[in-house]
Length: 349
Ligand SMILES: *Cc1c(COP(=O)(O)O)cnc(C)c1O
Ligand code: SF4
Image (cartoon, rainbow, N blue to C red; front, side):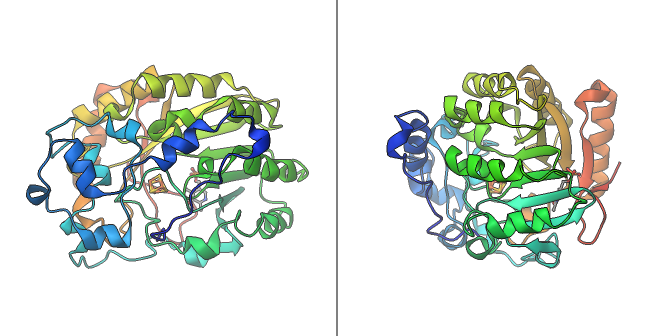
């Protein structure tokens, strides 16, 4: 899990010249107290069954800009439900484990997870700007496992040693929670590995803290010698607003030296949040309006504390079939589940 004292991003350095400093301030000003969150939304803590034990296990964290997209007075708000620690998380749920997706077994080097052909996933950092209650990494031993913490070197050795790796996936945690200079250190080293031909970035930051996509980040993206895929993570249409649209536009405009930058979104099917054909259709339509194509729709990873979000496969398949009937093919994501030991995400439909 992400430790309660999850590391804050490094303070802006002197040579930063103020560029890119703003998102760090917004990060630090995030709401971390569930009662403050509810008070800001005009909700009664008692009525919502918030859990201090769940918050102690995986602390609340919400940037104020994301909070501003929640509907005041609505205890069922789909954005609120993704971040609020509830009693339900502490109920025992058979079959829900600490390492739901077999990451511990697939570890190939410090912070490197190698499960699928051609692709290596780098746990760049354990920090995230928002803490999502359903996250399969809520119990991951980030302190020991992040590639940045080890100065990248062990991760780079693992990547250099395996010529079968053509794509490096920056994940976490949220890799864009690292200072841009830290990311640039990594990509400068990756550029020296001839078999790496693609870079992918899995990030929720442009959605939850769109200010992260600043001029410094765009300059870094433009400097990269590979095509870049950015896979965002939004689960509900209301996560998009004008600021997120603008961040997506800035990302798409930051064309890497080595190819195009393409924006995708992955979402998780979540009971009470997006488990209707209407909600999902609105999400993929809204994403497309921001220039984002749907990639995967994930069945929940069965991680301890997330059982109350689960939707059974029959219902998931029925929802997917409704999407196929409603949307153009390019706006229908693949419905998948991650199964430990499989050679890819497992398609359900
Ligand atoms: C999901 C995942 C990937 C990427 O899989 P794609 O199907 O290419 O999106 C790569 N490595 C690991 C460890 C993963 O969990
Ligand atoms: S941002 Fe991603 S990695 Fe971080 S808590 Fe949310 S789902 Fe998990």
